[in-house]
Length: 256
Ligand SMILES: Nc1ncnc2c1ncn2[C@@H]1O[C@H](COP(=O)(O)OP(=O)(O)OP(=O)(O)O)[C@@H](O)[C@H]1O
Image (cartoon, rainbow, N blue to C red; front, top):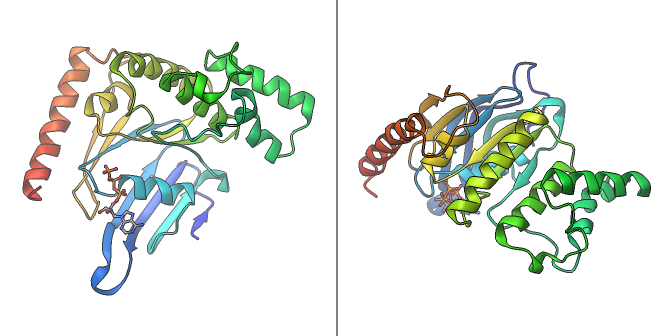
């Protein structure tokens, strides 16, 4: 595994990262010499056609899999927190116990755990739901719990793989506001995968567009519109339209 100390100016860096699944005639080249530096406190959204290697990239940075070539560095050697489209909560545990789990695993004492869980649930506006079970919550609330659980890891780097992809537009909109508030308050670094170009323009400091497989970076857009942005703001729409055009050209070029 090539997760080592990142240079001071990078929270996450990928240097010439290649990922091949399988071998021989069956081999799939998912990422092809991809280099990317994410600065501390930066919010980077990754967009690209289906199957271009976005989840592969996040899984490699999360340390769930190893690159076939190249190097990945994460600041401080800390393991980033990872959130998916599915909340992946333990259904037999209460909301509070789900959030408490990372603290328990780190052997945080009972009194401090209780305090931290209450604080984290308040942070995601679920202060009154600690004793509920995940199935009693809506999809948006479950993603809030998943976010609280990820924050309990105390990691400065958050990796998010389509975390709001299964939610309705209104819930997603509210969660954009919540995530942005938490990201700013806690000075997090976020690497966020999405199919939704508008969502990327709403949230990102920088949108990184990947080619169709094998994934390479084909364009980067710096989004300097002030925060908070509305998803229907003209500047968000203009950026989304530009990125969508580029993505469409790439999908056509690739013959999908
Ligand atoms: N374990 C695996 N074994 C073989 N091929 C894989 C494996 N995981 C992913 N792939 C392939 O690697 C490519 C990249 O997959 P990945 O899931 O990273 O893409 P993605 O951009 O996240 O896709 P989507 O947008 O559809 O979620 C795809 O062609 C996929 O089929």
